[in-house]
Image 1: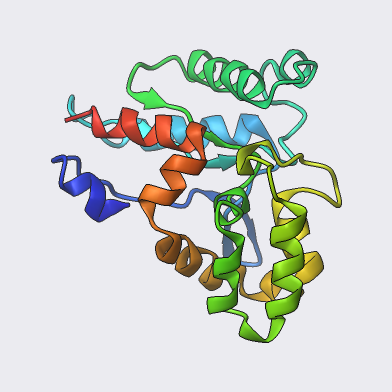
Image 2: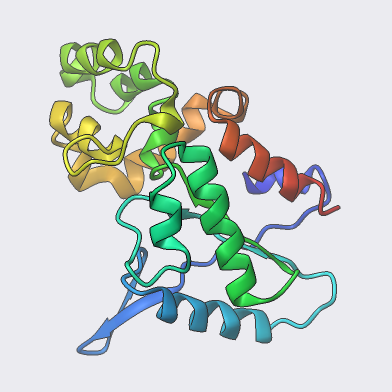
Amino acid sequence: MKAHLAAYRVIAIPRRLRTGRHRGQDFRGGFLRFAKLKTDIDLMMNSDRNPDARFTTMLDLYALPGDFPERARAFAEPDPYKKVAILEEAMRQSVGSSRLTPYLQLHEFEALLLTQPGELKSEFPERSRAIDRLATSLAGCEAERVNDGADTAPSKRIIAQVPEYEGRKVTAGPNLARRIGLPTLRARAPHFDAWLARLESLA
């Protein structure tokens, strides 16, 4: 995605916020409290006051912390696109800066991989039949509408058929997304497409 945005003269600098520290070791990825996330975002934005600098997030909607603003109202909304719109606007207002473009992935990163589940075979050829079962189970279902139950969230569906994915998601996930490619991701994941379009427009 960095190279894609560079073509629009938008320079992307990805960062993984520190979400914990134990015995001198930093932990990054995921977050347990919105209050901690907001503090980290504020610190990051204050560290770069360039008027042209903009910030965004890529956070999973799945297992969203209980202290996330407007969470109860959003989760009463049955339509996932309306739900995520409420949460992103609440996050933007909580941070209180026009430099932030919040983004929550419906329902987690693995939903992007479900836009073309057969591509899992490129990383896990030994699970070809199981991947076919996964693809069949998703027939006619929009990837971003796959629900977020404890056993039916996108990552849980993949792991149920490809257990090895759980231990390799950090490397296999990005590899698969690259193989699927932005055109397919954008065509089959409207919320992701809208976010990328907003980033393109920053130029």
